[in-house]
Length: 117
Image (cartoon, rainbow, N blue to C red; front, side, top):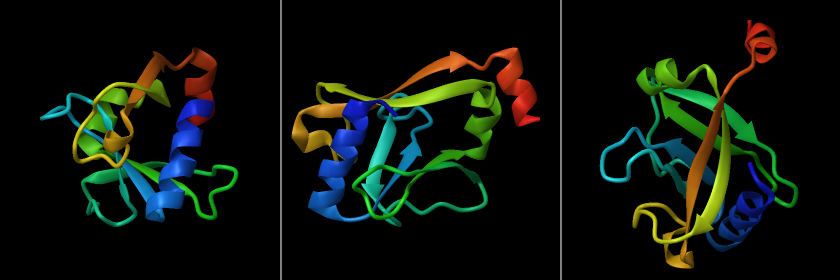
């Protein structure tokens, strides 16, 4: 995550409580990372936990999920959560703040792929 995204996550955590993300698979919002209250978006066997983000000043990790089918397509990429000015989804907690989360991606290097095994 970028420092700006971490700052927004801290602000949202203070306002709303524990948070989670689910990477949208493309419907209404394209491919936006959606921020919810922890447990508000139900995950299950068709989802993959990509990371539990530890953020300084946030008492618990923020989980980041993606559907298993989307993960199969994106598993060779490095994902970075960022935040930019603009209107995102009305479903994601940052929407009223006048910003939106987005994913910046790049292909993993040969070394990174080898480390993942």
